[in-house]
Amino acid sequence: MPANMNVNCPACNSVVEADVEQIIEVQRQPQLKQALLSGQLNRIQCRACGASNVLVTPLLYHDADNEVLLAFVPPELNLQGTQRDQVVGELLKELTGRIPKEDFRGYMFQPGQVLTMQGLIEQVLEGDGVTKDMLETQRQRVDLLGRMTQADPKRLRSLVRKHDAEIDAIFFQAALALMQQAVQEGQEPLVKALAAVQEAAAKHSSFGRQLTAQAEEQDRIVKDVAGRLQALGEKPTRKDILALLLALASDEPRLQALVGLVRPALDYPFFQELSLQIGRSPVAERPQLETLRERLGELTREADAQAQAALQRSAGVLQAIVASPDTDRAIRENLSLMDESFMAVLAGNIREAESRLDIQASSKLKSIHQKIVNLMRQQMRPELRFVNELLEAPDDSAALAMLEKGAQNFGAALLPALSAVAAMLRQQGQETLARRLDVLHKAASDGEDGKIS
Ligand SMILES: [Zn+2]
Image 1 (cartoon, rainbow, N blue to C red):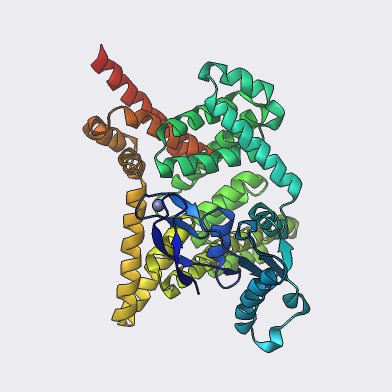
Image 2: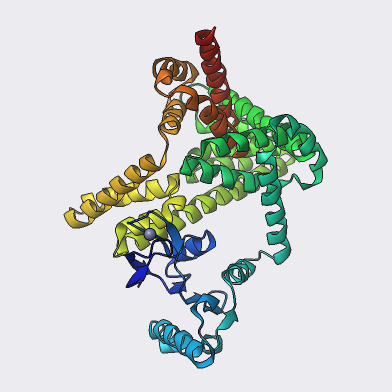
């Protein structure tokens, strides 16, 4: 439970009412751990001056699965010796009060002490298997990115070549994270600069070229497999699909792509039919079919486990939001976790509550849904909303028509938004959608040139 406190804004000294979290229990409230790691925990916005600051407060961090218990008393509080012990002792009492006696473990009586917020975050990450070296590498990549976004665009190519060895998966991950943040905050010049850096890194670094080639190859594979699937007609039978699977059996990348496309068809009757066919086949052909059956079993289990894990995580987040006394705040803190899987879980829960005729639950869930949609819209700049609509258009020509009609409403902001989102999609391996934006970008810049001349 957060404590409701009155605190002074460090910028203007106004009194701000704030819900302060002092105990982070990872298993109970995973969103608080996320908030801690992203610097959002106890971030308070002053109503008077708008300043946003992280409140200086003692924290107790508990991860029961990994038996980690850490206490952080900020040095700014100037607490010494017994005062300090007393503050930690009180938090510890509150925490252990929630834990059943039979679950007590020795480590719970001796929290590890960390001296700085950075130290706390490092130890938390270390518990997740992220070492100091990895963090240091990440910091260097973020530094490099910072320097590159400020560099003269004409120098980007040579900068990328010079730092070729540092342009790796961590570099692209950091670029993607910064990009998402900049897009959300509407920092257009930074979005534009990051898009240019990503483009240069993808084109001119060894790793980037490899990544681009892989994405293009993957795109070709999916298109090829989708084409073969389409050639089977509107409603392919189990036999047709099995024949296609067999034809691709020794081509692992295509086999994986096909399983991804036809997962619902690979049900129990399908495997039964496959087993029957194995039984009927000449002995010499059986091993090949058996290998395929085994591999298909593995691939479908992997796909299901991934989907299941995503659903469980989303269900946990939803539970935390429903249980939170401050829904708006819980939604804000978890906004980064609200992906497709989360929205599907939320929609499923609404349907389920409606079918039980539980008006109270369904209206609460619906209001959560509405708040999320509103918040996401608010956080999105108008030109990004428009780019999203363009991506949702049924095909490229429909998107082009929408662009022609709507482009003049956004002026010069549209082109950088198109290239930024294209770069982001490319990073996520969504080559087809990224290409659509390239086409739109070209159309929009041609239109712009036309007006100028
Ligand atoms: Zn203030």
